[in-house]
Figure 1 (cartoon, rainbow, N blue to C red):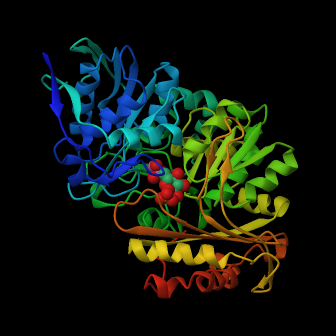
Figure 2 (spheres, protein in one colour; figure 1 turned 60 degrees about the horizontal axis):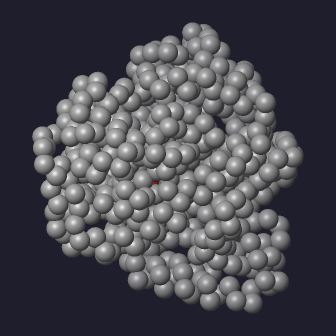
Length: 543
Ligand code: VG1
Ligand code: CO
């Protein structure tokens, strides 16, 4: 087996976004594109010589090809050990756990999360550091800088490794372990949650549907929910990961998980419904005829963490991304624990978790997680909810309504305009930023503006500063409108508008969310002249 040095020229579009580098498969598949990026990662982390790396992905089209290229590059460059999920499969949280459990130096996770998969769709790759979490901006920027200089990469000239069989082999001088992608993760879950209580729930006839959306969580959910916890076979649907995710869009929300949503709001609804996304780090929680917003889910889990074995001693603090509703802040205040507001993306939670400042983290985009790994974790959230249902002996709706009565309700919605003209979207953000000047103290739609800024975050652990994280319009009554451009899309721009209002009065907790926020929704449109500027009449997705 010989080591080849391949000459290439740099690509100028390899800057990682909110969660790694995401591009069309066609872009990744062009000669040298993936290899250049992988070489840039290796160079940015001072090489992989003598290191142990975890490698796996969500099973989408190009997953296997990418694994073979990365493995041969790692082996050519002195990597000591590669730990790869059987079939190339590892959910994002399972990869994070493996990096930690095996004390690896890092890992490469192949996923474009919920973005559609297939030859004409998306692919993605991201590097996670030794704590199991996404590389911080300092590293992703170094990767980007290096990607613009790359002139060559080194790769082993060898046959493909057999990803289908568990066991150990050698690739050059590198030891390659093909492992069960589910076992370690399932063990961790059994340690955190009261499996006997959940099993008793299912044995007592409790009904559930978990929709894996033809993506990576199928094998995990089947092994844990059906095989270990005893839910009836068929509880987990769309459970076989397909390279094109069955042509679907595995984003667990009411729009894209419409099959599950339809069932949960029908007369045939089981007691509990849940779905996960392409790479297994997001979750949607539903009760009978009842949808739990991700922001509320974070707050509920925080307020009830003591019901679970893994968190029975209580939580140290909560972190949420800036656009996530302030429901969790109210819980933190009552519990007397720290509360942190970070920019969008899980990489900003890593330092807080490592420093022991927070235990639970969450994002409005259907992501919740804790210090058990350094990624958000879809199935973890589902098991957490099952544990709460078993412990409190209440339905999902009863738990959430009780929470609102105790803490008040944060009405919350996000409006997404997808595939918008990028120039128009940038213009809209620039106009909004200009609109912020001198706004504080003025009254808009009957509310006094308390702050109007572009969110910037100073990490309390390492002092690093991240600017330009979203335009905020905050009012004295706690309501907010936030505008951001997505950092995960691959076509044009996606504008996200986040709207929130607090309602303390239990008599007013039954309103339709869009109706409850109607005046702020209208104000958001007016502030940005949104519909006219991007030529859209309605959002593509409302969550
Ligand atoms: C989106 C979400 C963000 C999440 C990110 C990665 O980013 O808004 O909260 O962390 O996706 O999640 P953006 O930049 O498009 O708003 V995943 O499950 O796609 O890895
Ligand atoms: Co994801």
